[in-house]
Image (tube, rainbow, N blue to C red; front, top):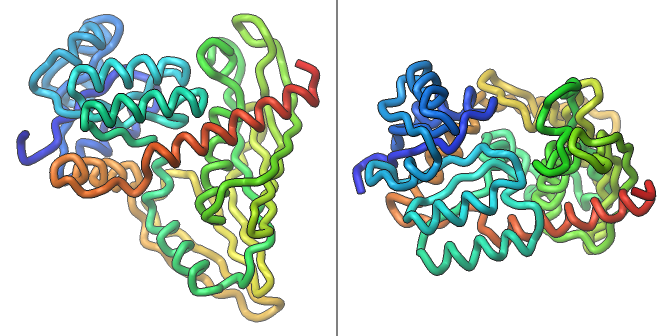
Amino acid sequence: MSEKLRWGILGSARIVRKTIPALQETKNGEVVGIASRTEEKAREYAGKHGIPQAFGSYEALLASPDIDAVYIPLPNTLHLEWILKSLDAGKHVLCEKPLAMSAAEVEQIARKAEQTGLKVLEGFMYRFHPRFEKLQELLADGAVGKLTFVHVAHSFDAGDGDNIRWYSSLGGGALFDTGCYCVNVSRMVTGQEPAESAAFGNYRDANDGGQIDTSIAGMLRFPGGATVLFDTGVNLERRNFLELTGTEGRLYLDNPFGLLEEDSVLEEHHFGQDTVFHQVKGENHFVRMGEHFADSVLNGTPLHYGLADAANNARVLEELDRAARKQAGT
């Protein structure tokens, strides 16, 4: 393997406008190929982003000896298939969240990764931003005392029409698009898995039949006593915040999942005392995630987040989805 991890991109989804430049910016990686369903589209993206090789099919990219790892930004229901095919082709995998549509699918990926000895990472990029290092540090130092409540929101307006979020066959809907962040960060800050869950959703007709969730409100109760309240939607005004409240104080972070290269502020509040504003230097969390993954592949260092974590996140999402659909009668 070369001194840099040689990346291939499977697909040309909108997210690659952010991830391709980020992977190109990493110190220990380079993007050498991109595949699309047609060679014409692959060449268009390759030319736009200065990528040396364009492939007219995903299979052709996976067969290339010039590529060590792939980034998968495909629709949610295609993740399992192409992760497994990538591993069979000898490629390490960084895949957009959610890694798969169920815990059983993640466990299938984990077995294949173990058999092949290859790395797989679920692409929750926000976890690699310095804001969350500072947040974890403050929690460990007792800034809020005993954590009692977590309130997290993540929503935006996906518009109407042909957006993939309105296709049930592609794994669309709010919970698996934006709600997965809410579940993931809740598990991170509590350091536990929820003991109880509840959810209520709003639904519309999917573009390909059935009912698809437009917004979800949920609650998670953790063994340590913390309760999480979250709301998420893909047909709402943009909202993005995280608030942690405990017996000794409160932490507040605006735009926790956003791409913030500018400096950000983590607020610390204590019962009417002067607010402490923790300034955090801005960094591209996609770059940091790419460098972490490449370091793990090139040098054998452990990934911060393994497939057991991804399976647990998927398990909670499944439980919430069942609960919300039962309440709505869908």
